Image 1 (tube, rainbow, N blue to C red):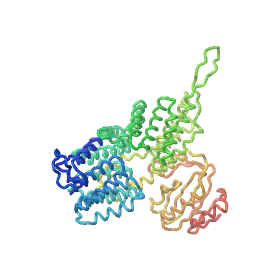
Image 2 (image 1 turned 120 degrees about the vertical axis):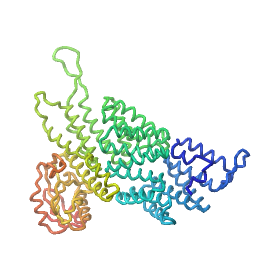
Image 3 (image 1 turned 90 degrees about the vertical axis):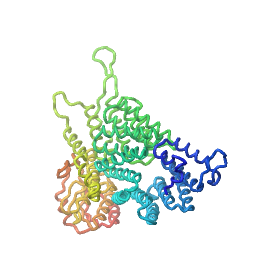
Image 4 (image 1 turned 60 degrees about the vertical axis):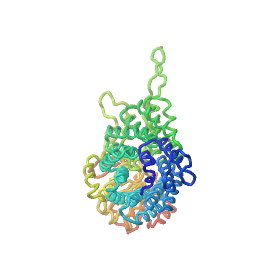
Length: 617
């Protein structure tokens, strides 16, 4: 028995939870409650028909209230109501309904408590799945939500395996199958496997539509929009996001509607329609602010889109909106939002002197005419935003930043009328082209084939590509850094495994070269010695063996251009690595050789030695 089965023939609550606005669901819940008396007994009113099975009806009512609270994000109430429903079903001996209610309560805790709830969630869901017949619906739902816990904990490979196992068991339960396809598609969007995600989410959206599940369909279309954006298919993305916005407006889903409107405003900006973007972003902010509690993350993103639209329209209110977004992202501790806000501030700072007007003295007596003051944006901090975005594994975002910077520089210093090239223009264009090579169109068909045939291979490929994209983003960002690099030549037998040579998400390094048993990493020269030592210690742990490294300072070193696909490495200036590689090969295992130019004193050397290295000079 499912938790809402006791209401069959009494109420359409199950259908309403899938397809009706929250107000309509609440009205139906109140109608059911009016038919029940104290303690779940039938009401005494003469007009009320007798309702057999009062305790089960009361449990179903509590479950319905909990399911609505979960849908609307009232997570404390959802946990309380769903736990109560599970206990009530248990007292009535309804084991399947009890276990399904327990699964929903676990999901509510995961959404409320995030990583801190993962371990206990996995333990409880495993207990549910291990009890009774393995073909039960509750077993499939428990596996599905176990994968959710694994994804939140950061184990994408485990989440994929669990979801595929749940998908195989979901054939008798079409509604659960559609939900699992949503989750699997969302996972592939996160991994950047957009072709696989699109194939799964299209199937999910069709299943939801057949069942009349507008909630599930809206989720599928929202993720379809994200996948299409990843593929660069802007019109497909807009159609999917418009469908999500329409469904969420019908449902009264503030979160989904604010998300869709914000994405649509960003699309309008990308297509050069700043006036449309401003209207969409304003609607997104109003929807997010009107939710209870307010959806502060989407308020911040909407404020950012409003600021960018106003900037493009020449509105003086742009700076205030951008500052509001940046302050809110900082308060929320949102790294992507903070990076994007830093980018916005950089572009606004660069455009301010370009578009400002000052009086120009006339040659002959005449009214003073305003003229545009042209100043190159040489002091603007583009690098911080670019580095943050690259470190988040978003080279496409770095490419957009590089493109915007080129456009602003060209507005500040137009191309000479004699046709001569702009100084450094070729380097800037090549850096942009290299950063923009991350479109995954070529891999789409292969991803679709791998979904079911070799899913583990797909996960490995997607994870390696994500690491490579992160490294590419960092190298692209370093084209904007001031001169000065710390270079490390690293030697270890384990470096033959190519995936291990790329710095991790936590690292501050970028990799510029890889040969058998050798690699070259570099850092901006301002990087703290403790951070460099920690990065090398993390690499040693990943390799499972001592490494040898020779570190040197390249005071004038620069990354001019990240590598193109198939290229042998980044294009560098004033960086020598040949002698450094030979030196690294000659060192003893665990030895770190420091160049005197680094200026690391004895105390710094001791802190690096504390990480398990033998420091020599």
